[in-house]
Length: 93
Image (cartoon, rainbow, N blue to C red; front, side, top):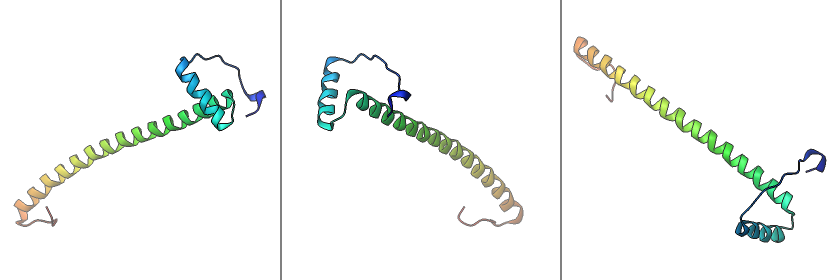
């Protein structure tokens, strides 16, 4: 991370959290800026993954409803055909 691409900001953290951060940066051998940069990058990545998963879940729910409606319509049509020709056209129903 080059300094020319960065902006300086001021943040406030509760004392307990700052102590945890300082323990971690001492252990990892990085400075606070690098630690916050890594933490923010990881958080944003995970948040985007959660958003994609939620959109996929919504899509699966929508498709399930569409498929259920199609199956219900097909069942009604199959029933009508069975009444007219006396046998099922699709096995397993």
